[in-house]
Length: 551
Image 1 (cartoon, rainbow, N blue to C red):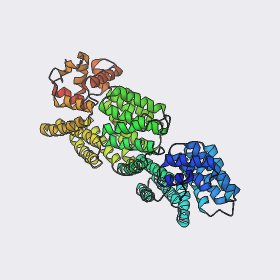
Image 2 (image 1 turned 90 degrees about the vertical axis):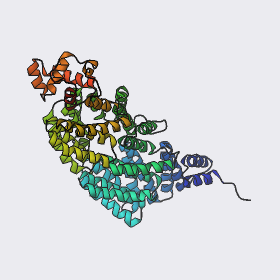
Image 3 (image 1 turned 45 degrees about the vertical axis):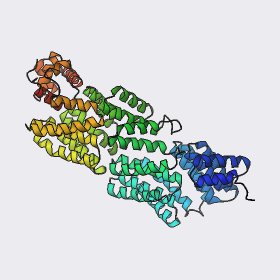
Image 4 (image 1 turned 90 degrees about the horizontal axis):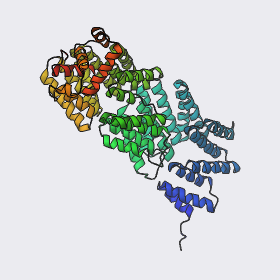
């Protein structure tokens, strides 16, 4: 008669089937009944890690390490010590990480200097070089690990070291080379050649690198692959929160805002990485972005503030919210502060498009033009696509603001084509809105109507209420008395008429004998009441409703 499977047998079977919770439970029961060998302790620890039980992971690996030491197995003991150190480093415990890395090195000693385990110990050194701003040293160190990974046939080591080389090259501005290394690392991931925890680590790190350089196509491709991998392991907690936040960002960019909100909320469900984690901060920020675009400003503000409490920078989203609320001065102060405190080209490339839009709304056109020059230079530090489209749109907006609509047409058309190629419908519609304003300024009423109506249809489909209201105002969907219905005071109508002539806030202040700060407040009130966010839109409204003479 066949023996009934034991808890150990069931645990091993569950582990092989990637039923991580069952594997953890059965192997834990087996450990309570008997002494597990180091390989089964590794299975127990890894299953615990994947369902979010970090303490189980640490205890099991500590026991496996001790068992290897007692058996005189130096290299396997060093491998256990390495993964404990790697885990401690990843969760932000550098002192304990250093201690375990030191133990691993001590176990190997001089006689085992050329082995796979010693090559693994090069990885934290390469990470440290990256963190210290030395990508050259990071690349060279990771290249050494890559060579050993190939020589020793270590797929996990090879994928980890290749992806570090790729990240180092990105930091060096060698974008195409860096992406090729990341792609090579991802081949072993998608072919399921790696251990489960290394698969998740490489997925999330590569997607993070692609997000950093705004490589939207690769971010989308690898996020989809990560989503499918996570879905095949429904009880896995590790990596699922990151996957959902990445997916939320992609869905929001693609205009699927309901799905984006759902994914961001799922990332915050109990059992995830925790409300104070970087994952939670990014998920909350993504919620704020979707609420802002929809015009749910109170919800957006709450989400941005919660993201900030979780440690995620709320900019440029919060600044764009202030702009949508009509407070261009506060918005400009926020993006100026954000730019002043970072030298990272990747972070600056994310802030600058918003800063330019806000600077134009605040009538700081010289500042906007300087920011455009930097953004154009930074395009070489990022992947082609998003930054190019953002720079083209900013150039067109600046030309339009300066009263040169003919010069705005070509860059705005490039921007629209770029956003369409990237499957970014909201950004594409905003480019068409600006194209409509340029056509109108050139006297092409039919061309303007075509662009504005197409933009309005797309924005209405997305649910972008503030942008729809702005286009309605420009198209003349309001009656001739709409300015009064919006509650413009006589002074605000007077300021609006002067804005429509192209005067700056300082020039308006001189003409009306009031302070520049008062003019700025009037302009902010006008934007808020009319549901617009730029002087170009205010000018179009004034022309449309015969408000060029004031009250």
